[in-house]
Length: 147
Image (cartoon, rainbow, N blue to C red; front, side, top):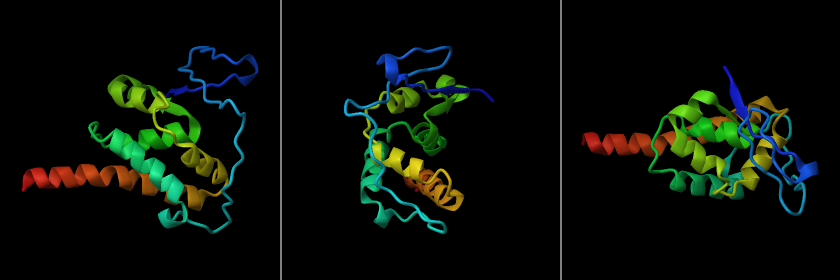
């Protein structure tokens, strides 16, 4: 399985592709300080992360017209690792373009992913929350169509 990774070359202030899909992801102010501290044994609770919840809601609303079962997976992959599977690029170009265009400001989602890289239980609960959040509206729409 191949991945297209998004690469940032800060020292040159320009992006070079080297065979990958590349985007500039730095800010003008430089690296952001991570405000999230995740302790061993913690799990994700949306009430404890209202800024993350607001950013995910904005992404959900902005991609609502692109109902696809992999929407949550794609969002996790992009905001966690800035990598997307090649087949996603080919099969869902509109969704990939929308997410990778940086139209959605998801600084807190990215910071939370950075904070929980070494905490598998928290990371998995956060990823499961994202998957379910993006699946539920699609399931609800399908159920109302059947009624």
